[in-house]
Length: 167
Ligand code: SF4
Image (cartoon, rainbow, N blue to C red; front, side, top):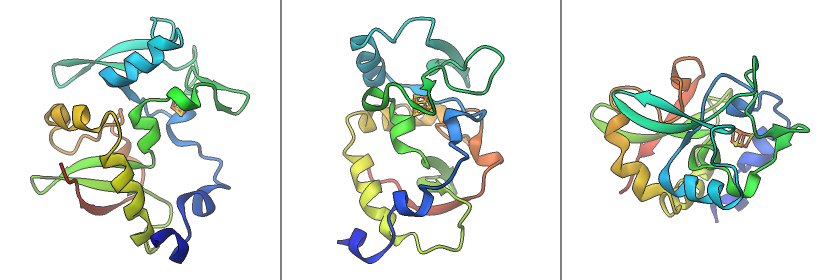
């Protein structure tokens, strides 16, 4: 078990106050299966979601609070829809980037020199996620060096390339 050997993500990053896309400028996308989940709890309306043009494709994304970088679902310092949060949020701080014509898993990190081998079990879980096949069907939309978390989180946050995506 990799998790027994190396520190896991929660112990490595649990004290971080950055909170990434929850309170920062990054905007999580909402794929079709995510939309169904949000709709089931009445959170798929314009109050919570908007349309984004991503390289000519209209994709739904989560709103920020008015005049704020905080996600509309960020309430009392936590995610108010944690069990229905979209794939982008479930995946973070992992993301997919096209590197040398291959889609690769990356991890945003303030610890670029860490041994990230323990992260492999997370990647395998993400590749079994209910939204993963849809994400990979649409991944060409995020061509070039654009990540699936918008706007281009990868341009402002250090990241490490972990391995190629298996799909
Ligand atoms: S949906 Fe939840 S996990 Fe995702 S950005 Fe908003 S507050 Fe954070």
